[in-house]
Length: 602
Ligand SMILES: Cc1cc2nc3c(=O)[nH]c(=O)nc-3n(C[C@H](O)[C@H](O)[C@H](O)COP(=O)(O)OP(=O)(O)OC[C@H]3O[C@@H](n4cnc5c(N)ncnc54)[C@H](O)[C@@H]3O)c2cc1C
Ligand SMILES: *[C@@H]1O[C@H](CO)[C@@H](O)[C@H](O)[C@H]1NC(C)=O
Ligand SMILES: *[C@@H]1O[C@H](CO)[C@@H](O)[C@H](O)[C@H]1NC(C)=O
Ligand SMILES: *[C@@H]1O[C@H](CO)[C@@H](O)[C@H](O)[C@H]1NC(C)=O
Ligand SMILES: *[C@@H]1O[C@H](CO)[C@@H](O)[C@H](O)[C@H]1NC(C)=O
Ligand SMILES: *[C@@H]1O[C@H](CO)[C@@H](O)[C@H](O)[C@H]1NC(C)=O
Image (cartoon, rainbow, N blue to C red; front, side):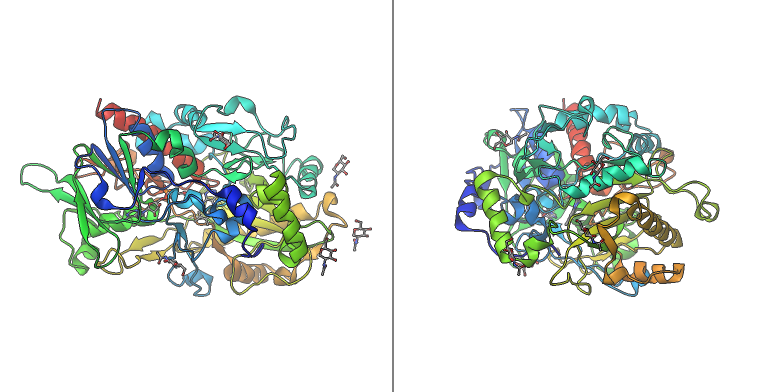
């Protein structure tokens, strides 16, 4: 893993110090007596919805967030310290998965953000919108043209301000300005400390342009190829949904309250024989045994707890598969068999290579003098490796339809112009497995390979009826043999990429953990012992589709089916997983849904 958790010098701590806003409340007795909307979770989506709904001065909005304030936490603010932002922090949910049967029975940490900004406050800031195919597929599946790429592009533009990178280099030729926004709350930028590694990546696109073509902007709808990686970063600091959508000019609105350190424990319903159950409010408490409070909004309860939080809360509130509700003796509001099903996540592998360089970021981890110099450069000049996320470039690629896997299995990609797999490159050893520690010395290049169109499906189920017990999380990685085959093909493609001439004399061969992999069986054994999550759980409360033939939890307006006045707005509602990284899609989903809510109550 990259650097260290050495705490930064005191002057850096001062530089990052953000005054906590008075509008962020910790005392539940200080909230108003009446609200129009209650939003559960001040995470990636929740703050977008809160911001947009509070644009209407006649509506009163309450956000209830289980975690802490993001302000002033330097591991959460300094981009390079992303590796210290999780797991097992006072601001994370420390989930672990059940043993993964196709990964030699390994369990893995499954961290989420438990603070304002949610997972956007602890993620790796890699910003990808998916492909036009992805959104057009959702539109077709849900029967709602509003989810098509052409309808969503204006939301992608609305939400962002494309910002110069920290080093203010000339970014011409690194992105397509016509598909970006200049006035939105979220800052998105290109790398502010591009290293020599990138010139090798992009030189490879010239030499092997058939297999690895250059793409000016992977966020233009046409995602295929190798391009510069955009990130949710504003100059030198992380741009999360808290930084962006709860900025001082928004949080100061008199009709917006954000209550933190209170976990929502239940959605309340009124039931009658005549109509569907109506969501009337929520209960929340600071922890087990703490005093419980109730809020009853006049218009809607909006769940933005993320794929794990919203799913657990629905089940606890009596909406879910009958077997589970009965097993935990939860009073049934509505049988909804799909709640917690269809969990999709991206299986990833960090492939390590020995690099012949003195300039890799490994020296930051290995050498305290280098670390100190880099910290000072960041604190005094706002420059250097600390301004960026781990990768500056991204490849989104397809396998040829002639591959034998596509004769055995249906093609899982969301369309002919969408990726099966992805590469990211880091100028250092990046790794997340407790069993494969970074070597104490040496320089490395990491090539992360990701299957972005997996076929495996997992689930989230309750472990108990207590809201304070973690649910059972099973991403079911590689349980479809198809995903194993795609991962094998991706490994071979990575090897081919790194064998091109720009890497000669720079890459000296695979590192110890992937040395001597020759046969497919050897590579597959390596895949099973090295696959890990990219923390992209999606789909556990998916939209219904195909005219109701594909069951779902929410309708195309993200209203929970079978009840009224309850909506879900977060990564759990996507029927497919994005070929890429989900945060941009969650922001855009939340922007559009805020408009749907405004229209519904106009
Ligand atoms: C380590 C890591 C790295 C990642 N890297 C990237 C990346 O580089 N690029 C990318 O695009 N995506 C990345 N992701 C994924 C991305 O961050 C998520 O898909 C996205 O942020 C999910 O948004 P959300 O609104 O669905 O949920 P979240 O942002 O997780 O928000 C949910 C919020 O609800 C709160 N909550 C949950 N339950 C309750 C409750 N009962 N009561 C009150 N509050 C509750 C949580 O505390 C949290 O604040 C990463 C994720 C992680 C964890
Ligand atoms: C996660 O672990 C950290 C460090 O041990 C702890 O402070 C925090 O409370 C834990 N979070 C949860 C939700 O259990
Ligand atoms: C980026 O940060 C600067 C300096 O704090 C701030 O003025 C600007 O509004 C931020 N941009 C966005 C889009 O939030
Ligand atoms: C990339 O190609 C350019 C142009 O041919 C060359 O000048 C440069 O040295 C190459 N970079 C690397 C790292 O090989
Ligand atoms: C650490 O880095 C400094 C500065 O570059 C260098 O002078 C020193 O030799 C390095 N130490 C080791 C042990 O490599
Ligand atoms: C390492 O790189 C240097 C130049 O940067 C080169 O002279 C040397 O031959 C390389 N070593 C190997 C083993 O390729």
